[in-house]
Length: 342
Image (cartoon, rainbow, N blue to C red; front, side, top):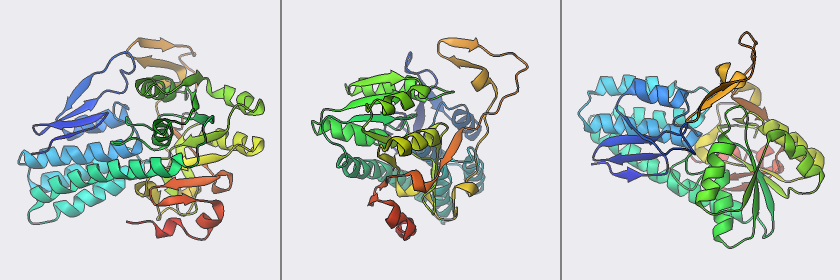
């Protein structure tokens, strides 16, 4: 029987529960996820978010359904439906492909459960490795800027970029974190600030448009961000606003690192132009909603452009922190990503 637990996902006695991230930080609400349509809705409504966590959550649901006795064809169709829940986050697709291979086996139910458990354990290990490698880049006294949320809420381990920060803090390095609030959904202000507080890591929350001033004043030493998909040439997609940070970092000569596991690398995607970008609901830009209620600040008839992600060109990246190592531009251009496992 499955028995797994992480910051935002847990399976207890073959029941899957998801921490509703839209209710944070005011409330910690665990939702019992029982069906594929419910999981798709939770992913699309960002109750479950973060590329690794989305992939693992979908796989855990398949495992729970398999253990409950779901038929092979039913599980295969469920996997296909889950795979399409969010178009940009490639971890979901990579993980579901592993599950589809398991579901093609004669003993599909046990194979499905074993595959989900293995993917869960792998993500924990990948996060730890990235944290250790990335923390080597951090010096005591560094003022680190990060964007969106990349911690345990977005993975089932320490996190990606947040994992680096967490590991550096555990090593006793005196660090200060600047947290972009991350418009329009405030994942930095709601989630990263919450996680930093949980770990007692010193931080200050800023509006996204304050980052340039901080860099100009010499108050940012390094930037660490996550990724939802890394193309074969090193271009990567991340939460909207990341590209702006990369441009600012390049101008102000601030080291800029992307932290992601090999499961985020898409070798079938040649460059950033080929990464599909999800367009989200206009209401997210015209106002805000959460556990506190709903507020609208724009005209009801306002036309809105709301891409969830932007693409940062490889030429703006100082280094790629993967679970297999830290790579510079020359190594990426020489094909380092093509040598990633999987």
